[in-house]
Length: 119
Image (cartoon, rainbow, N blue to C red; front, side):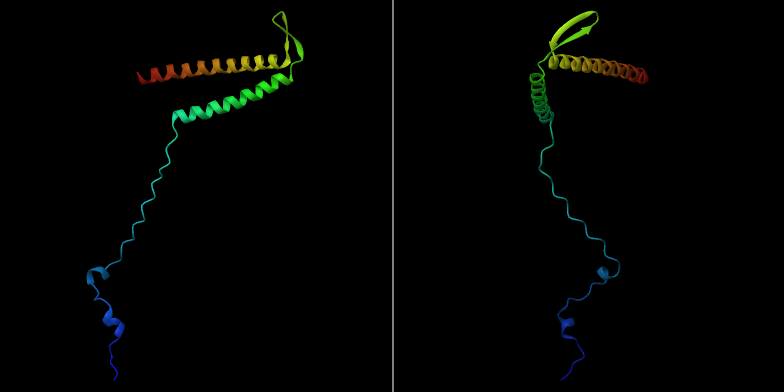
């Protein structure tokens, strides 16, 4: 006996005209997983700076200990005899101080300009 009905269609639920009438909206993407990794803090940044400073100081100590040969430095009419490493360290510190002073003057200048502009 042959029937004109398809057996698989009989098992399927009836089609809902409201669902099949229009295009289906796109599925919402899954919510991203929330990262539980803590944000960096000021203290963690300070800790990193301390570790870097310790490494730099260790290199400076090695540099000074390897350059203990005395040198005579003539500056502003004076003559000083110091170890080479110490002399270069003082020169580097003087340069850093000069850069810091110029930077501080520029920051003060910008603050004054900002204060004038806000009034």
